[in-house]
Amino acid sequence: MARTITLLKIFVASPSDLNDERNLIADIVDELNISFLNKSDIKLELVKWETHANPGTNDYSQKVINTDISDDYDIFIGLMWSKFGTPTQEYGSGTEEEFNNAYSRYKADSASVKIMFYFKQAPIQFDKIDIESIVSIRNFKYSLGEKGVLYWDYNTIEEFQKLFRIQLTRKIQDLQLNMPKTTAIAIKEQIATVALDEELGLLDFIEEGEDSFNEVVEILLRMTDAIDWIGKRFTSRSEEIKRQNTLNPEMGNKAKKRLINSSANDINTFNQRLNTEIPLFAETYKKGIDCFSNAIKISLDLQSDKVEDIANAIESIRSFIYTIGSTNQTCEEFRQSFDELPRMTKEFNTAKRLSSGILFDLMSEFDIAINLANALMSEFEEYKSKY
Image 1 (cartoon, rainbow, N blue to C red):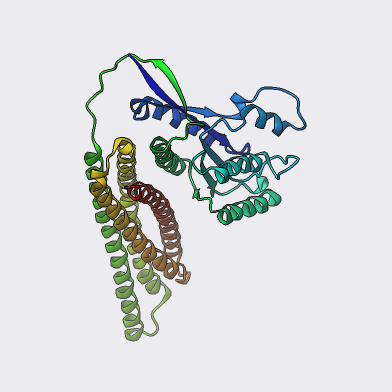
Image 2 (image 1 turned 90 degrees about the vertical axis):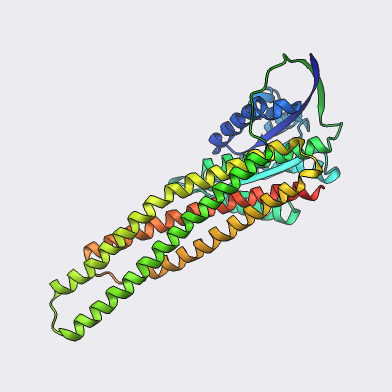
């Protein structure tokens, strides 16, 4: 039978160095159209200059794009990394001009467009660093803060994927709850009735998310125990070296090396323990993030009597962030003390270097987990505030 479909248009603006992200956005839009959103009478259409701007002539090329695309979109997505973009007659880049067009609409009517902006923080190859672009990006990013535009940083394509999926779903919810007639286009489509598979519901996803986060806490406790263990081993080894020096003031280098290399063996054991836990941590927290992200999707049809469930989810995520933050600080302090240890033997230096690298990778994973969890909590809190 025929039903009304709400068409929401999403415009993507970015310089040419973020093609992977642009392709990923297209994949996520297709995924959402197939899954949850298609069942909520919403259809998404991705608007990009590659597909929606026609060849033509005008004062300058960016104006051709602006004319073809105009303001016929509901969500603006901006991305920047290593390039600021090609200057236009009025702005430092096409991306900046496209953002300002969207921002002007937002200032005139905050319900007319939702703005999402992301800055990639991944390292840039040395021979591709453009100092002028970096300065322009930094100034532009600062201007967003002055305008009150919320933006998010990310490091990896996987992190962006999770961030974007979470936040796009919430923006669609906002538009659905208070949809401006001037930007949402209702169209009629003939859609065959499809039998829906049995799916997990809101409470299922929240419960699984909480279970995953509780499991993460157990993993973090094991990591903390490992740090406590290696600290005690160092204390014990140091006391043993002092005791041997006292008993045998003329102890030779071979004996000293044997004692120091015992500490290297302890460090290697510590490294093995962390290397076992890190993949478990990454897999488990990502599962929890995905579960809570799905809960946000389910909440498209959520009513105010379910706000208590959302409040419980917020508390679980807040506790998750606090625990990771505390463990991260412990790791940072331990890594600093590790780096300050003197270079003693080849075995010791190698073990110390490997341990420092493992801790750095772990803390990078912590940063991603906290970033994603903060995004989740922000979206849940925004939803809860509406009721």
